[in-house]
Image (cartoon, rainbow, N blue to C red; front, side, top):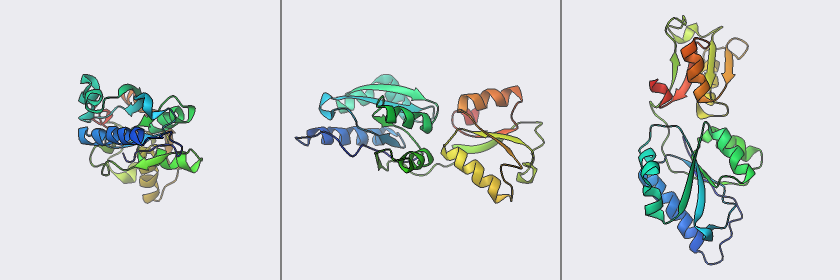
Length: 208
């Protein structure tokens, strides 16, 4: 996971709105939200913001649940859960969301399509909380066994990028491996049903 963003046109005549918005971002960083992408389309002076987040094993989940972010920033925060960074950016583009927790891949995809956002880097790169998990009985015992297998990752996610890079590193292409770009909850369900041989996922799906 990676940056934080705002649109290029933030109404702020006094400078106080921008300061409060920055305070919100900094408080989020302190509580452990790794990466935010903010498209600020509403007036910052309203002190209301919609924040999109993804399922993840982060300490920030506690602060979302107990209202600590609201207490720390003075903002009325509407937290909304999404399955991927791609979904979050779709909501940002529509104006429904102003701040979002995303990774580098969906951020790059969004900006390449011209979405007017800025990124504020808040977290380090992902570590062992993202990995390729294979199903028992899938016949995958090493990376050399990936050919002909059914693998999945959330669309336009850092995991999706890593899965494609991994396949390429083995001298394979998407013609050699069936790659399904589906939301993480669907990956878990397909994995459990035996429809998929493996999936590149992040916590908490990684622990399922």
